[in-house]
Amino acid sequence: MTVVILKPHKEESLKRFHPWVFSGAIARVVLDAAHKAAAPEEGEPVTVLSAANEVLGVGHWQVGSIAVRILAFGVAELPEDFWHERIRAAYRVREALGLIRTENDTFRLVHGEGDFLPGLIVDIYAETAVIQAHSVGMHVCRQRIAEAILAEVPQVKNIYYKSDDTLPFKAEISEPKVGYLITDRSADRTQNTDQITDEFWSTENGLCFRIDWLRGQKTGFFIDQRENRALVERYARGKDVLNMFCYTGGFSLYALRGGAKSVDSVDVSQKAIDLVNVNVARNFPQAANHTAVAADAFEYLTAQKAKGCTYDLIILDPPAFAKHRDAVKNALRGYQRINAKAIEMIRPGGILFTFSCSQAVDKEAFRLAVFSAAAQVGRKVRILHQLHQPQDHPINIYHPEGEYLKGLVLFVE
Ligand code: SAH
Image (cartoon, rainbow, N blue to C red; front, side, top):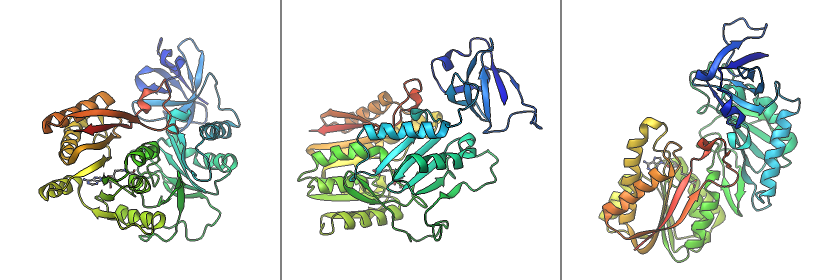
């Protein structure tokens, strides 16, 4: 196997279980005999040694500033049953957390570094697992990962691979980045069509959602808001609710179940709005108090305000405004703008749930943006809850970069 030798003292962070080796920490690379090229191939497993020849671990080689993502510390090679062992461990944690129940078959099985599998995401929707690779190393291992999931997760029968948006865009990959890796019904499932031909339903806390992993965003659903949706349910009784950036209506269904007087769901994507309507019809066939509109959030809020419209409870769950560090400044302006618009439209004594899923914007910066919005509008605002990502999106304590979702629940006087 190829061996990566670090510069003196560069082993410290690995000894503290931080799973990345930066290219600047590497003294030299000793290729194994099988190599024709002058460098390791992206995605190949490499052994990492300290300058003093101590074995630090084994990981996947990457092109870029993160050169190796460590899979196992303190060993020179991956154990034979590595994938089975890691997937089993991840499953056991979800089981212990009480996330796997008849009324809840939707959960994240693997959250990258948070489950000691850097570069890998696996979401479970009833009988289907959706795998997303963020590294070529995980791409190379996808079939072995799929087989381990099939063996270790009793509910799973189909495994879909969806990495077209997540693999490093410069990586030279000839194999398909989307498609079923394992299926119990191979016909009709491998093609992307524009219609929703298959009806896949998944249950979250007793609410049914149609999940479209073929055309949907991310792996098909935003599992990370499950606990925060449950909190909306608690506050929804008798309220006029606006669910902004609703996607397939997660918060809307919880608000309806919580006894909201009315719920308006808004998203710029018509496909998302079609799914909101399907989901509401399935869970609340009698509901006459829900409307769904495809519109841009900023334009919608401006138009509603001009009409004098106000709400008791607003949810703002925008997409990541900052995808990179250099976009943070603009993102903060965006958060301030949208929050100011929402705060303006809250009735006295109303509540705002506001979120940021930008990893590059930390919770202090986000809070400051929301504070600036409140000050700009001149309302008296108190923080009721500080929210974050749920327990199936764990943060490896040695890898704080894994923290991304934060939210505030505000009481607006
Ligand atoms: N709250 C959702 C997840 C939101 S993801 C849930 O619980 O599932 C962010 C959503 O914002 C996406 O569905 C995307 O289509 C939508 N979006 C992006 N830009 C938008 C804009 N300018 N106006 C309205 N919606 C937008």
